[in-house]
Amino acid sequence: MRPQVIIIGRPNVGKSTLFNRLVGKKLALVDDQPGVTRDRRFGDASLLGLEFTIVDTAGWEDEDPSSLPGRMRMQTEASLEGADVALFVIDARAGLTPLDEEIGRYLRGHDIPVILLANKAEGRAGDHGLFEAFSLGFGEPVGVSAEHGEGMGDLFEALLPHIGEKQDDEDEASDEEAEYDPKAVLKLAIVGRPNAGKSTLINRFLGEDRLLTGPEAGITRDSIAIDWSWTDPKDGEARPIRLIDTAGMRKKAQVVDKLEKLSVADARRAIDFAEVVVLLLDATRGLEHQDLKIASMVLEEGRALIIAINKWDVAEDASGLFNGVRQALDDGLAQVRGVPLVAVSARTGKGLDTLLSAAFTLRDAWSRRVPTAALNRWFDDALAANPPPAPGGRRIKLRYITQAKTRPPGFVLFGTRLDQLPESYRRYLVNGIRRELGFDAVPIRLTLRSPK
Ligand code: GDP
Ligand code: GDP
Image (cartoon, rainbow, N blue to C red; front, top):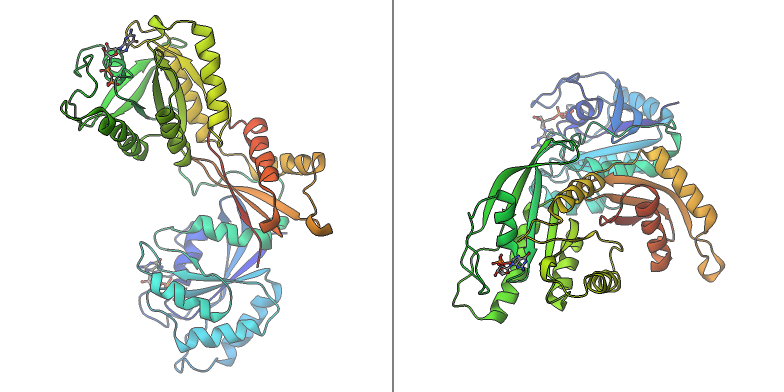
């Protein structure tokens, strides 16, 4: 049995547009003119793997908007009978009208869960109406744009507690989200402290002395994107890479401590562009405080991170150095353990294929989507192996988990009393997801949601 979701709202708020988006076909009539009469329509809807029947109710279009016509009321009554949840749509741009309030009162008189949707909220255009909509008394409105497809992840999260249990077991990843193409150009940034060897590495990749390098810290360069293609020695395939070199904007004259700050600013800019960020260390200096700061920032921003220890050709006590850096990373990076660590030499070329191969692998993990069914199988096992605690004698109830997004992977956990979930338990879940569901060392976000 597919769950039923009913759309309710006054004319012209975007009900048909929403219906079309959820059904994925240009079925319904969309019109600027209020009062285009429609019958009650049913459609098979799919949203990020949630499958349900959507019902669009016509009939609030009355000559006298302050009264509810009997015909409509009967139709809507009938729809409400069979529905699991109602989507009450308002126009966030127009703000609340008396008819919205009337519909709100009508819905409160029924025993059906209501999700308040503030539509036409693309950009920030609907902020005003969004806040106003709180006054309807249905909790926090979900801002969406039916026309532009924005907010569909939030709508999904709002629907899940009401209809998630009625799903068939094997739901697939949705087609709402663009398919991940592992062959697409990899956006890669190289960051690191001055003199770590970033320019030398980029030159090495490109096989030509395109960038200036020198022994003094902070040679002047500009921030640029460079497209090139790496030949993977494993299969001889050419893999496109866009290198983002944001190490620029340095002046030789600038003093070193200013450069330290600049390397953080560089990293910040690189992070905006990149899928995978390589943090380059200098083997002759080891892991320094500034490096950890940059690494943390990369993970904080949800990017996939690889650490490369450069100048391996001149490293002393190579294995001691490697293990020392490994340990310092695991101690110093709270977010992720086991960040990939690769020894390289930009000068000799050692380790560079390993580095790039790791970058592609990590992007795959970063882009990965686990089907809801598999995720919840893991979830049930994880809870059975280690049940959530019961602070004050009352157990925290964890109901389901869903992957709301990829790149970086984001999960939403539904349950009750989640504000009391200890940080250690959250870490237990995050580490489990990472280890057992193939997310390796990518940063993972876990959001907690209690249904209202
Ligand atoms: P209904 O009467 O509630 O079914 O509303 P429609 O779906 O027919 O939409 C009414 C008008 O609002 C149409 O002109 C739509 O193009 C427009 N509309 C629908 N959704 C959005 C949206 O998310 N943003 C904006 N700006 N316009 C929208
Ligand atoms: P950037 O400031 O991070 O761009 O660093 P550069 O690429 O300008 O390199 C700084 C210095 O380190 C230069 O003198 C390079 O020749 C040297 N260097 C870079 N990579 C290596 C390497 O793999 N081995 C050795 N021995 N020196 C390197």
